[in-house]
Image (cartoon, rainbow, N blue to C red; front, side, top):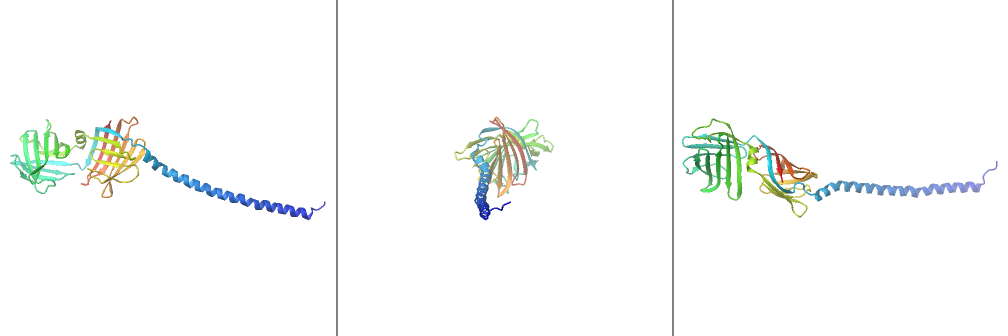
Length: 300
């Protein structure tokens, strides 16, 4: 058999080398394309991470509207307590829990000194009848609050309504926990606050509206203006300092409250599918150290 000519061998070798070398631009192009793909995937992942936050900012607050309290399941541990002890010419009153005061008042309608109490230093007790009384709290001779006391017919429930200038009346419901009823003074005994009844008697109206800047304006017992951006926003007329909002889903909002940079309360607001009912679940700690747990139902 005849051998290939040397020129043919050289031609084939050069062709293979050219083909081998020509493959390098394709490999280089692949590497460049891979780099672009990685950068694209990284950008896509970044957008995917940012998109929920952007969606939260754009999504409406499901709580928007005007709401009124329909039911309440509330508890405080330990509860607020009120002790009223009979004296020869008056009563000795002690409150413990969220608020503390201790004073002795005569029944003659005259000023009685009440030193050591926050907000007042004089007390005037007026006995209207067997089941009604009025207490005036004074600071250096000036009335700062008026408390109207009303006993139920069975003597097991005491409702206190506190009127203070510039503030809505505050209603507190107490139930008799122990201590015999005295015929000449039905108010005497040991009382425990019923927080659920207090909430219902007091009532609660909420108004939540857009603020025109991508956030909401909350108006109730306290108020704030905030957005779903993870930031802390100042509170007004609240025992807490700031609130942070999170839109969990189209029907659920979480609110985290802080006092002195510590989380003190968490709320979960859940709105029904038809937007007509709303449930608030709360857990928190008061400045007194008491733990509060609530489940409040609202309706439009």
